Length: 264
Image (cartoon, rainbow, N blue to C red; front, side):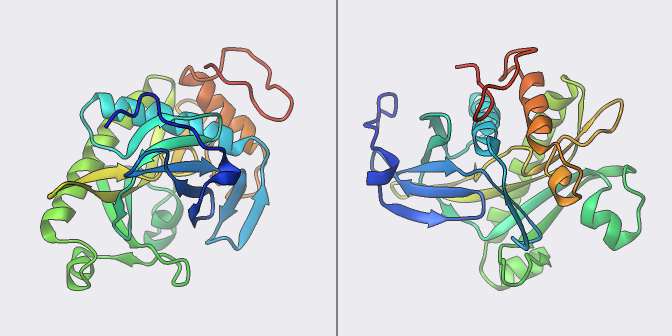
């Protein structure tokens, strides 16, 4: 299937498949594809806190594209095909595994709260945690026993997900360290990609400052959604800084009105 020149259909003429807290999925331009639209909604604590932040969706779309393109080039399978415009990506349709996979390198957030570990403490090794995707239940933490008992994923699929998470962590840690950012932790989702009778597990959803904790390596300044969760302000400015360091925004370029201007 050739995804290089897909037939673009305006958003208002496409069928909406699903709407989440930060993204909308529409029917794709080709069979087996979807269009992932990034909204400006900022949410926390399972949408108990909600605000529209102008320009956030544009930045997350571009940062996630940058990261997923690198993952694809490294042979780490993902659902990402290409960016369509400032807010949308063409992705492969996958069957999402109902788990959030969290990889932690430094103690922060709920880990610090649960275990009484001071935030900022380097962990003896990276830790992988699983959370059941359910806003109604508050995305509870679950074990591999729960996952297999309730049929959310098989033991082999869990192994595949963990292997992907480790590879993504290795790549992201190096990518961000190279631009002076510490990768504290991050969340990914995975899905089953069916190709005929063959199925493989791929990285799905997004990877952006919405789903990562990113601290400046020298000052420990937070460059992620904790600025929204903790009423720190400067959310878009922090995301712009991440984009600039990754080479997505032009260096020293002031944001254009109505949102940042991005390098094409």
